[in-house]
Image 1 (tube, rainbow, N blue to C red):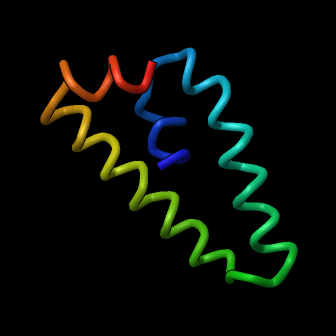
Image 2 (cartoon, rainbow, N blue to C red):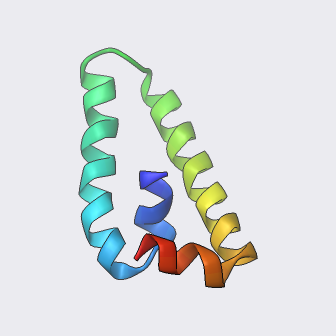
Length: 66
């Protein structure tokens, strides 16, 4: 969800969650916990689901996030 809010969320959340999501993704690959393709797929899925959530319930999703 960090990746999704990094791309789809309001700017205040995006500024904090993008570096966090990127560092977690890089650490997973560096520590050989996941393949790079797994991390990219999870980032894509999280971003798409966050975008859908925000589009379907804009009045609910954004105030909770920010």
